[in-house]
Amino acid sequence: MLVLAGLASLVACTEDIVIDKVDGNPLIGVAASFTDETKRHEAILSYTTDFYSMEGAHMVSGARVYVTDGTDTLFYYEDAEAPGHYLTPLAAGRKNTLYHLHAEVPDAHSEDGIIHIIAESYMNDNVEVVDSLVMKPFNGDNDTVPSVFFGDTIEWVYPYFQSLPDPSVVYMPMVFKNDTLLTDTLSQRMVIPMAGYAGFYVNGPEMQAANKEIPIHYFRKSKLRRGDLIRVDLYSIPAEYMYFYYSILMSNSNNPMMGAPSNVESNVRPKERAVGWFLTASVVSAETVFDDR
Figure: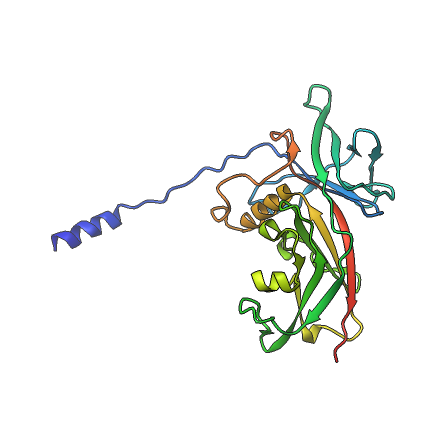
């Protein structure tokens, strides 16, 4: 009984511990990309908010934004209907080129009235072509790939292409259905680090023998119709962006204690004033039409 009494006294002597939340100064969040596709490339600037804030992001308007390779410079213009969203004219980057992003943000508290934000990213090489996309409702004997979801057959998408021999290459597929992007958030995407499989023909016999097959997306068959156009844009991304992607996924929670025990990766500087990522990527596209026969 003495032991039980002692335990009871320990339980009774608990009290709530209140952790004071320290609010830091807002940072400027940067989400920018530049590829070798001919299009209007976008940079989005916003201020970070408190973790528990219910307010939407405050956008950064009136900035001067441009990208340069050291020789040519391309200026962004702010979208009149979307403050904080900056677009280039129609343009395309070049593979195997280092790009620098600059954003000059008005700030009354800075010495010269401007926060100078910089980031750099190398646009990697990419495969010349994705030979084909195959949609099939079976898992190729890979028990980790489900073939049925709540009684609905799953159509998996498999790309076939000759990968580059560089083991540092990372691919990121962006998937569209009838021109609607299905992977518009990081949580919906996947990355494919080649590492020891560099130089393999992806999803070919050699790779299947070594590692089964690699599907990049799936569809519930009941959501597909004959004639649906499925397109995949295969991005070749810097390995550093993969680590940023992983750190975002690990921190994607409404519980602050569930994230990684470190700040999210960032290639934007200065770190005490800005956070985010400037991504460059070379892109190769392939498409197929769903034919339910």
